[in-house]
Length: 175
Image 1 (cartoon, one colour):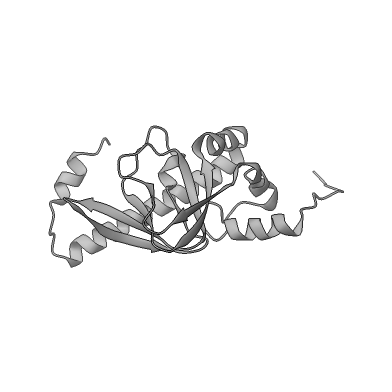
Image 2 (cartoon, rainbow, N blue to C red):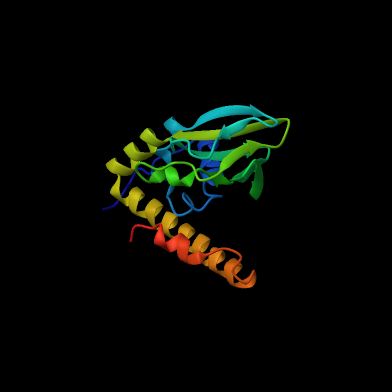
C-alpha cells in the first residue's frame, strides 16, 4: 500500500528511536514500531549502590540505561559476582518479555547518579499483543540473545575445564 503522508516525528522522538535501537531487542524495529513504546517509557533516577531489582524478584519491567553505570551481579553465598557492567543505551531485565519469569541476577547502580528508562511489562506485552509484527521482531531478537548467552556459557565451560556439572544445568530444564 502506498503511503502519501509519511508520519512525521519530532527531533526528540528521532533521538529516542536512535537511542532505543542501541540494544538488540529494539534494533530491528521501524520508527513507526518504536513509536508504540514512547508513551510507556518512564524515567527513573537511582543513586550509587541502589538496587534496581534483586535476584528472585518478579520480572516486571525492561530497563535501559540512559546515563550512569549499572552492574549485573550473580548472588553467590553471602556476596555477589559481577556478570556485566552496563552503560548508556544498554538494556537489562530482558526476561520480562516472557510470562511468569523472575530475575536471575541482581542489578545495582555503580555511579552517583543513574538515569534508567523503564518499560513496564504490562505495557510491553500490550504493544506486543496488539502488534504481531513487533512481537515477532522482539521475540526473534530475544531468541538470538539467549542463543548467544548459551554459546558463551558452553565456550566458557569448555575453557574452564568444567568447574561445574553441566549435566545439572540441563537436568533442571523443562525441555
